[in-house]
Image (cartoon, rainbow, N blue to C red; front, side, top):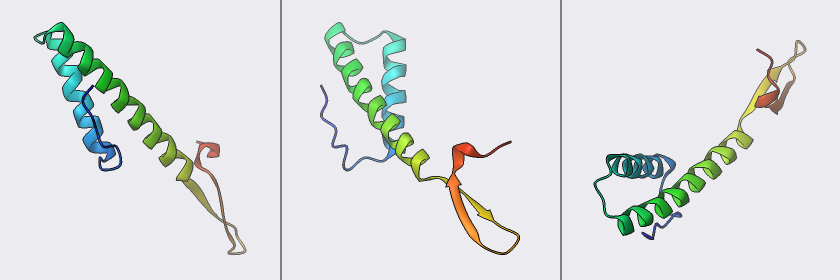
Length: 81
């Protein structure tokens, strides 16, 4: 498997690499061994991207301003639309 230093890669770069691998695999123009290696790399990139997204979601909070001027926060996923 292609070694990726996940401590030095951004979410955007990982996503771009993942998209490139998917295009290559969908084109079907790579050898089987290379396809298996690409799939393993894609799996690692997908996991990395999912973890980054989950971490970002945990950091996002809704900021509430009460009529009396106090500020509070709550998890963003509790926001009613």
